[in-house]
Length: 245
Ligand SMILES: NC(=O)c1ccc[n+]([C@@H]2O[C@H](COP(=O)([O-])OP(=O)(O)OC[C@H]3O[C@@H](n4cnc5c(N)ncnc54)[C@H](OP(=O)(O)O)[C@@H]3O)[C@@H](O)[C@H]2O)c1
Image (tube, rainbow, N blue to C red):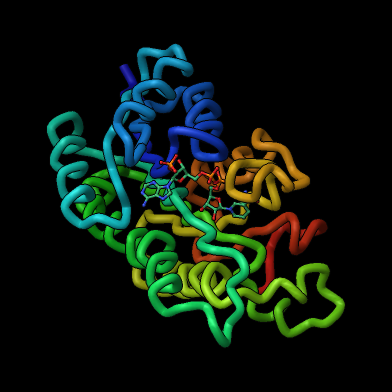
C-alpha cells in the first residue's frame, strides 16, 4: 500500500491555513495542523472531521515551541513531504516607516521571517527523508520590490515599515534556500495567497479563502518537473502568475 504524503501547515487553526489543510486532506494527504493554541487546533481538527489530521502545538515565534513540535511530530513520523510556512502576522497599523518602533518591526519579523526559517531548519531532516520534499513559504504581493518601484502598481502606496519588508526578506530567504537545494528533489517556492477576506485584514480582502488556499496547494503538490525558487502571485501577475521579485 502506498503511504500517505504528510504535510505540516503552520497557523492552520483558521483562515487560509485551515482551508489549505482541508484541500490537502481532500487530495489524500495526512495533515499535521499547526496551531499555537492547542485547543484551537483541536477544535479545527474536529471541524475537518477526518481520521487523517491531527493538531500540533507550534508557535513559530518561540524556539522552544518549535523544538517541542519537532519532537512531537518525530514521534509520529520519520518523513515529512510538505512544509507550508503559513503562520503570519500583519503587525500594528499604521506602520509609518519613519516612526514605527523597531520593537514592532521585530515582532513581525519574529513570526514572518525568523520563525519561518527556524521552523524550516528544525523540520529539515524530516523533509530530507521525503522522495519529493516541497516547501511553500506563504508570502504577500506586497513583498515585491520591483512593483514597489512602479507608481502605476495598484498597491504602490501600501508601504508599511514592517509587514512588507518581512515578506520581502522571506522571499530573499526562499531564493537562497531554493538555490542551495537546486540539485536535490526539493521544490521551494514563495506563494502569495492574494488579498483575501480573513481576520488578518478585518475581512476587507477581495478574494475568497478557498481560492487563496488553492494557490498554496498548487505549489505544495508540484511534481518533479515543477518550479523551484519562484515567487507566485496571481494578484501581481494575473496573466502568468509569476510575480516580479
Ligand atoms: N489575508 C490576506 O489578504 C493575505 C494576503 C497576503 C498574504 N497573506 C498571508 O497568508 C498567511 C495567512 O493569512 P490569513 O489571512 O489566514 O491570516 P489570519 O486569519 O490572521 O490567520 C493567521 C494564522 O497564523 C497564526 N499565527 C500567527 N502568529 C503565529 C505564531 N507566532 N505561531 C503560530 N501561528 C501563528 C494565527 O494563529 P491564531 O489564531 O492563534 O492567531 C492564525 O492561525 C499569512 O502568512 C499572511 O501574511 C494573507
